[in-house]
Image (tube, rainbow over all chains, first blue to last red; front, side):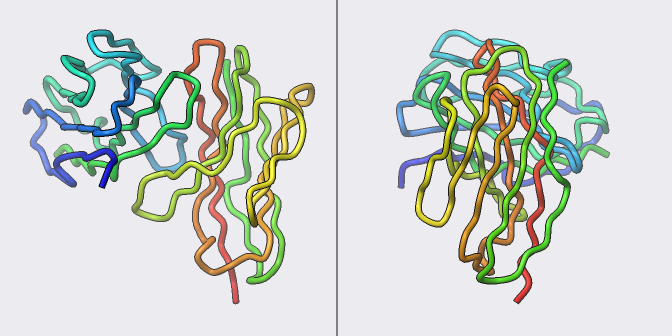
Length: 112
Length: 109
C-alpha cells in the first residue's frame, strides 16, 4: 500500500542521547516535511525539503537536523535530546509545494 | 505575526449540521486547507480552497473569503465517526503551511 512509513512508532529516550526518526515514502513525491504536534498548539514545521538534495528550515528548527539523499527518505535527527523535544512527530509529503500533504502515522517521543 | 484562529471545541448532534470557522492573518496567501485528525492518528486531507466561494465534496463543504481572511468547514448529516479534530491551515507566501490548533468536534447521539 502506497504511503508514508515512520519509525519508530514510539520511543522513550534519555536526555542527551542522539536519536534519528525515520521517514520513507513510496509515492515519488518531491516535497517532504517534518512537523511536531504539541497539545493545544498547531502543527509546527521543523524542516522541509522541496526536492532531493535540498533542505530548508521551518518554524522550529533548533536542535534538529535533516538530510534528503534521495526522493524516498527524509530522516530527522535530534543531536542531543532535551525534555522540551517531547512531542508527537509527523512526517509528510506532497507532489509539490502547493499540493495537499499526506502524513505518516507519527512517532511519539518522550525525553526523560 | 502569522495567526490562525479556530474554536477549541464544538459539540453537535448526530444527523445535524455543524459549521467550523477559521480566521487567518498570514504573510501572503496560496490556499487554505482543511484536515481531519482522529485522536491518536495522522491528519488526513479534506479540502483545499484558493479562490473565494464554496467547494462541495459529499457531506463536507468548505468556504473561503480572502478579503475577510475567513473560511468555514460545513459538515452535514453528522455521523458518530465524524468525531475528530478539524485542522485549518493556510499556505503563506513561502508555500509553507501555517496551522491552527484545531477544533475538537464532539458528536452526541
